[in-house]
Length: 224
Image 1 (cartoon, rainbow, N blue to C red):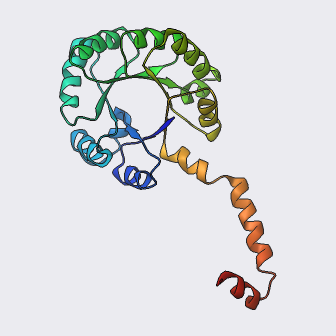
Image 2: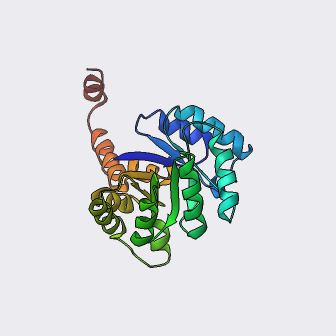
Image 3: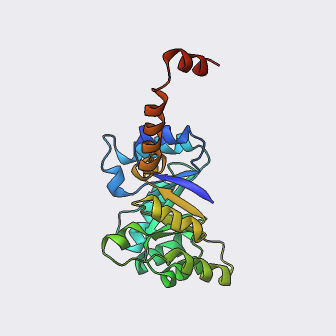
């Protein structure tokens, strides 16, 4: 299982890349719009940081011919750019065109295992199964990854399931347990993983108890 960071922020990408746990980056137009520099410059910088690891860049065109043209331009930024296409019919047609150019793809905004299966059969590199948005609208597709995984195993596809749009560590756990190949996690959710309130509360309890010892005993322990 691989872990991608879901952001376009250079500082955050650098921070999490230094941990050694990041295998790639996913971006989208909304994330790129939050940065001060132009999107092409940002993608170039991200690609340089990631070296040979994948960086997803999403098309903004709405028809397949323009998606294809834009995909070619985005892929020219760096060899590790993966082109994100929407999980609709125009995206499907663009996928077929990009496949002819040996350009890797990531199908985004996919909420249905059947849709994912059709894109995988057409040669998508990744299919992004969206978890966070389903909970936002009370769809609660807690088995989405599991159902998709079963279909992919039966069809023996090489397409990887990329679980995305995590709002909480619980959603990350579901995707891990159900066999997602890749987890793309926003920095805010990564922070939640490393800042469990029970962990922080327990550390506070330990610190308060430790202060009951004499300064001499504490110094002796801490200086060993």
